[in-house]
Amino acid sequence: MKPQTRIQSEKTEAILEAALDVFSTHGFRGATLDQIAEASGLSKPNILYYFEGKAAIHRALLNRLLDNWLAPLRELSADGDPLEEITAYVKRKLEMARDYPRESRLFANEIVQGAPRMRDQIEGPLKALVDEKAEVIRGWTKAGKIAPLDPHHLIFSIWATTQHYADFDVQVRAILGAQKDGHFHDAARYLATFFTKALRP
Amino acid sequence: MKPQTRIQSEKTEAILEAALDVFSTHGFRGATLDQIAEASGLSKPNILYYFEGKAAIHRALLNRLLDNWLAPLRELSADGDPLEEITAYVKRKLEMARDYPRESRLFANEIVQGAPRMRDQIEGPLKALVDEKAEVIRGWTKAGKIAPLDPHHLIFSIWATTQHYADFDVQVRAILGAQKDGHFHDAARYLATFFTKALRP
DNA sequence: ACCAGCTTTGACCAAAAGGTCAAAGATTTT
DNA sequence: AAAATCTTTGACCTTTTGGTCAAAGCTGGT
Image (cartoon, rainbow over all chains, first blue to last red):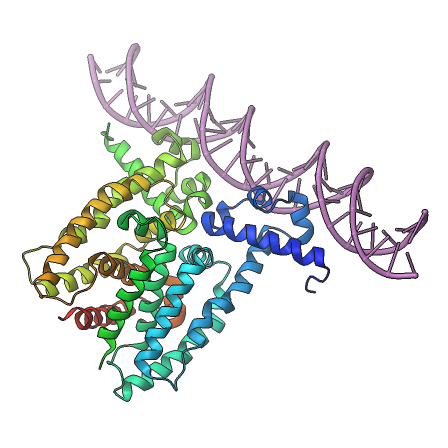
């Protein structure tokens, strides 16, 4: 099932890499096979030799990404210090936004438009993980280790504030006048203070 | 310049209303004139009688929306009680997300994709307003009225956490199992507590 | 060196999509 | 009620786009 020869894995990799660029900046519908062909240096028929079609490429990207995307949350451990666990999660999430903005925007595009190609993943594995970790957080609040805040909404806040720096990148840069990624450092300090203050019991 | 006869304003209104639906759920590129025609009950050529083209409709929507979108921030007054002013802003912004989710998603689509049709508005009036209000907030922190947090990043947090409920609506509903808009009430309470705790000096 | 199987592509195709236009149908003005 | 103006639309055009295909070009194993 999976690519086997060297040439196959190289080409599918090149296609996915190019497709991530194109899909994340134009959305599924806005992306064209010609753009992906151009960006990957392959011809359009050649791309269709490796993937069944435009939708298959998009699907492959989403499948591969969900795991990586949820990894930071998965690391949230019930055993650690509550405040530290959460601020560490915020930090990891912000680093993801800085280092993988295309992935973030790929998801953002998909969700904003109603997740027509991701419904199952969201209602299945994503919800399951969130519910599990929400329970962990609820345990902390019940034990008085952190301020009593709804765990689900807390997770939403973390997602929203961190992903904002990837998804709304142009806006952030326009307002801050940021040239490079320097503002991520400020954002990290800001979010650390912010969540620490909000969560301290 | 503006529509004048009754029939003109009715039809342009119907087109913009339909276009808001279509553009906000499919993005600019994903929306088609046929969909807008279908949704508005007009024929495609009839739509093109009122607007120069697809891009003109989109432009009209964005222009009309920016003002309303920034209204809640504009109301932030330097004279009021700092904490109350900010939490009231958060509340207004969340109400916007609840009552005008399509508008929020229209913007989200545009910004996520690099704001190709909105750059000027963001770098111009939007940045100007944000800078102005950031200065107000900076005054409050310097006076020790609220905790010392970077004003720009604070504004980003408010945008991110509130708009999240509109832009990522499907995800929020999938996770909360929300049927109607009941979760907005919880979100309002959550955000009020959250920002109050974070901002108290 | 040869060949079986894998890879690549130029030329096409059909459907979708933005847009045009002349003529027919309403409305308003005089 | 006729003229003038504004609205509406069926038919049509062009470009874009996802996708196909047969033939040509490569590659790796023997």
